[in-house]
Amino acid sequence: MIDQASKLRNMVESKQERKADSVKIYSIVSGKGGVGKTNFAVNLAIKLQQMGKRVLILDGDLGMSNANIILGVDLLTNLSYMLDGEASLEEIILEGPEGVHLISGGADLLLMETLDEEKSQFILDSLNDLGAYDIIIIDNGAGISKQSLTFSIFAHEIILITTPEPTALTDAYRVLKVTSTHKLKDSIKLVINQIHSKDEGEIAFSKLQATAEKFLNVRLEKLGFIYNDVRMNKSIMDQVPLVIKYPKSLASKNIDEISVNILTDSNYEADISNFKEFTNRIRRFFG
Image 1: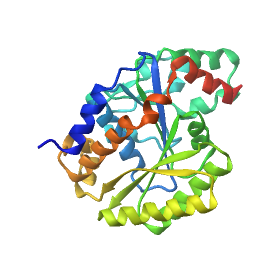
Image 2: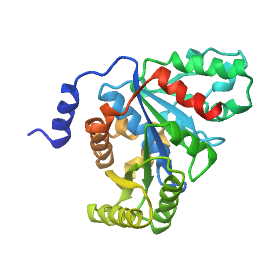
Image 3: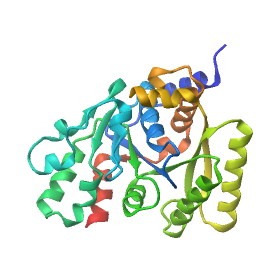
């Protein structure tokens, strides 16, 4: 018997291919640390890569970059090496499991407003050469910051991850409030992590949804739930992503379903940019 995820994957594969230079950008945010944001970002990227998409992770967690640790790769370079002429774009791109690529460069992207025109143009031209990716996943730092706001503005969609814990939900609401106040997006996709039952996830989602509808001008979309799974911590300790080390685990299957939900969402095909449009988005923010 074919499971629901397999059926949905078949739908993804049957979709008409997009233009070769088109890209979809997701900004992954959280209201607080400890909710599994980076772990989710990395495993989501790997799962989407396994489903046939070419994925780049941009680690925008300034000062706390750790996506490479979960990927199990050494972080030897970042965007500053390219700016200083010590490395090319290709040399600062790290390759992780399943061919997922990683760039650590959030700090230098956000310093573009203080860079001279030549260096800013160099970054933009280099980014424009990254036309080999279907999806860019931006792993932001926890909480609300100038960096996460900036990255969320030029992303096509925001994915907010939280847990059912009351303090985590309160902090997640703060993210929604800032998003609404600054009119960053009309809707946000929500992932509830570390649930113990589906009811717990549904209750947490309903609380945030009801509050957002009553007080904020932002719509919440339920992207999926991830069950609390002891194998998640084991995979982190072993520096092998969960979807690779324990592909049949419950949490891994949850990420599988979330990945399919992303690819079968009508907005996935409708809301995309080519890389020229992508670099123009950055240029608008930094003048």
